[in-house]
Image (cartoon, rainbow over all chains, first blue to last red):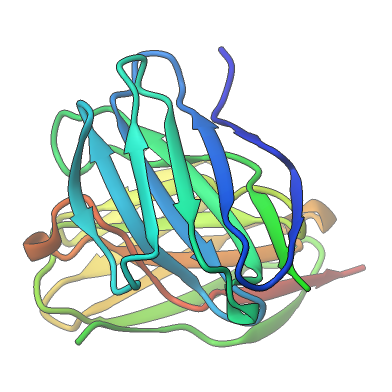
Length: 114
Length: 111
């Protein structure tokens, strides 16, 4: 069974640009989560999508947005990039049923802002 | 607010037992997860506790006390490959499926 896949692996942008990160969940998983892992910090929750809808949002500005497609894959968009957006962005997926479903993570996209 | 505390680093010897503690203060509680993350890799799920007590899974066990806001991960028969960061995460009931993570504990296993 294929795990969570993310693309690209690395992304280099400059300040003010826009970045798009992609995620494909494990087959059968309908929930997709996005987390930011900045250097030296723990994982910070960004967004949760399920059945195409945004279900929950972390404490991040509106320039962080995303969507979930009918096939349950997801995109994270970051507009007006700032230096502090440099981080590893991790996508996770889980089954929808119940809150005790473990989230399974992809290898992440490392976003570097120059 | 949400606060999850773990020791920053620990060192243990191959073959030994190590206990990694996690204390939490969150607005709600609907379960606690432990993940392992090797450098440059994705976090992998280790265990889940929602009721008080010990959950055993091979060389790994996890304990939860909800009244004390406390959990630990116990690793037995340590192997060099267990050198990794161990992440404690809580699902605060109020926030749905969101996971709130601690900063992680870097475990170094020496021979």
